[in-house]
Image (cartoon, rainbow, N blue to C red):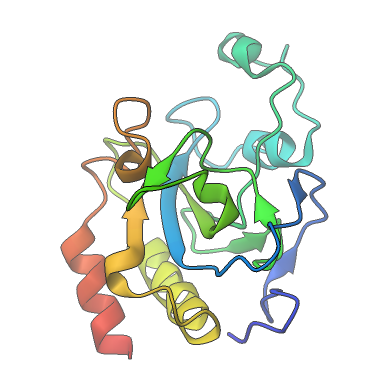
Length: 184
């Protein structure tokens, strides 16, 4: 996968999400945040994550969606359990994935990070297809944005402790980093 100067990945389904804005001037993209999402929680393969990122979620479609009314959220990429990847926001833009967050003394992580959502939950094992695609995407991101190093790849739980728990105990960090090292 190649990433162009606008932060768009080749060979990836592009979705025209409007939930993003410009990064602050002179911001170095230097952090990668791994998340998980499923809507409704624990249900996979539904259209609802896409709808949420596109701002078209019908909050009456499921009783658990009531607190999502008016929420504007996005991620740069979403990796389905099948390994299919969709890019919602170019990496050069600021996606709205981290919320109130801090990393290494720097607040507002959306300003300098890339957010990747995995279809999953904190307690459901991720698929091998997801790890393979995630590894390939992260390798491309690290080539395009060299300030992102393995030590600057974290979970949402690491930048918003006490508020967020994803990608959860089900994410196999050792497997992921081994795959990343073997692919480089």
